[in-house]
Length: 247
Image 1 (tube, helix red, strand yellow):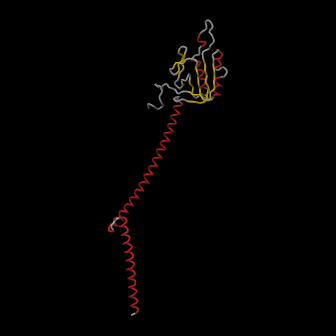
Image 2 (spheres, rainbow, N blue to C red):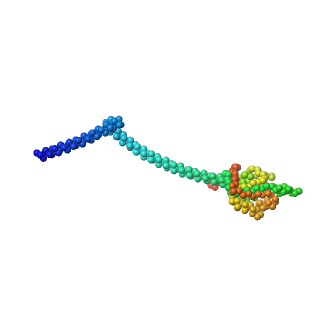
Image 3 (spheres, one colour):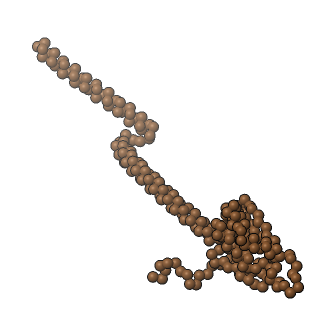
């Protein structure tokens, strides 16, 4: 009897403990539901729906995070593409600027020399040809050719920039350069190595020595910051075409 009583008592104690545990859990759940109802104003019967919506919101939030990350990657890739495009555009602009400078279409500055030549002040003797005391286009052209041969990178006559299509010809007592009439004195400016330019101009038997021999006033000035304007004329090629054009 005592053993059966002990077993019955044990089962009853276990049942009581379980009931107490269930009661505690239910009490905690009740308090939690009451707290949720009070704070969130959500009836306890809708807590399952709220939990489901919360779960779905978390899933949408995760999807939005992934979308934001993808968009950021796309923006970064686009920025890199634009940067590469800008670099290519900057390189093309630099090439264009260099080409324009080589073509004489931009003003330039640098070290060089200025050669000034004028008609001879020597009075003519009776019967002498007046051309003997006049500076001719051939004299100006000879000075320009000497400067080009000595390495000049830019040349102008009376601020008229010389380019590949420029010509110097005679028009009476004046010269024609780039279809512009120029009168003496002629100021021939050239940018380049001043020592090389002066050395070529002062060479024995050169054009300046010949001009001085006929009493033409010649002045050579070295400049460390010479300005030469851009070519302002036009270009017209009726016969020359790029190689490969027209098949």
